[in-house]
Image 1 (tube, one colour):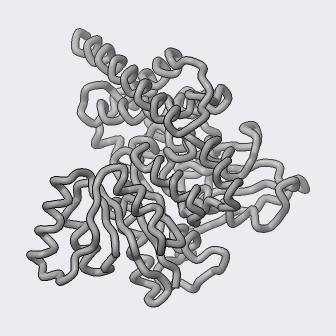
Image 2: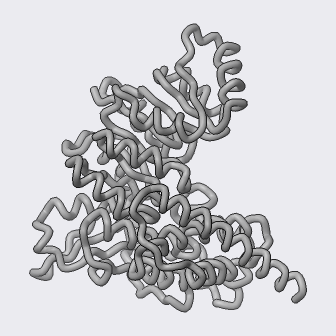
Length: 395
C-alpha cells in the first residue's frame, strides 16, 4: 500500500486525488494533508481518511480545525501544524512515499523542494515549482535519483508518449491548448472581457486563477517552461497548438516522423491515477473517453497577437535567472487585480511585460533567491497594477 501526503488537499486537484484514493480501496493510505483556510472541507477529509498529520495556514485556523474535529466526535485528533513549517512537515512525513504537490501558487515551493531532497516521489501539479525554480528543483531531483511525475494533463500525456522511445529519438514535444473562451472572440471584445466571461472555460472545471491563465494562455507558457525542465528539451523543441476539443492532451514527434498522441476525457482523475500508480497501470472504472461523442479533432496555430503571454513566457525561459519567477509572480498579481475589476483583461499581459522589463538579470542559486525574486516581482506588479488602474479610471 502506497502512503501519500497531499499539499493543497482542499483544492480541485487535492479533492480529485482523494476521489482516486476512494475509488481504489486498499491501494493508498493518506498520512498527511495540507490546506489553507478551508476548514470545513479539510475536516471532512480528516474524518474520512484519518491522516496522522495535517497543516493549515495559521494558528487560528489550526485551533478552529481542532475544535471542529472534537465537535464531530473524533476521538484521536491528528497532529495539527500551520504555516510553511507545517507544509514542509506534511511534505516530508517519514511514512509518506509519495507527495502530491497541488498547492496553488509559490506557497508550495519550499515544501515540494524539501520533499524532493528527502527522497519522496513527487506527483507534481503545482506549476510554480518548476516555473520559478526549475533549475534548482531538478538539480536536487537528479542528485537524489527522483523522478517528478507530472499530474497536469499535458505533461502527463507527454510522459506517457515518451515511454515509446529514447530521449535522443525525440524531435519535438507538442503541447495542446484548448484556446479557452476567447479563441474566436474579436480582439477588441477580448481586451474588454469581464471576469465572468474569462472564467467560462469551454472544456475544463478548474480554480479561478488557472482558468484565467487558460484564457490568456499564461498556463501554456508555464507548461513550456515546465516541459523544458521535466523532459530536458530545448525551448525550440517545445511547440504549442490550439486543439479546441481537448481530447488529445499532448503529442511527441520522433525523428522518424512518427507522432504519438495521448487521448483521454477532460477529467483530471486519469492523470492523477497514472502518477499515483506509476510505473504500473491500474484498471479504472471511473473515467473513460466516450468515442460516440468524438466527431472531429481540430488544430490551429497560436496567434501571439491574441495570446501575447505565451511570447512573454518564452522570453522569460530564454533569459532564465529571475525572469520565470517574475513572470509567474506578475501574472498572479495581475490576475487577482483583473478578478477584482481593477484592470481590464488586456492589462494582465501589460503588467507581466512591464515587470519582465524591470526585472534585473540575476542568477538563482538557492530557493531563497527564488523567493526574493518572487517577492520583488510582486512588488513591481502591484505598482504596475496601480498605474494601470489609475489610467483606466481617468480614461
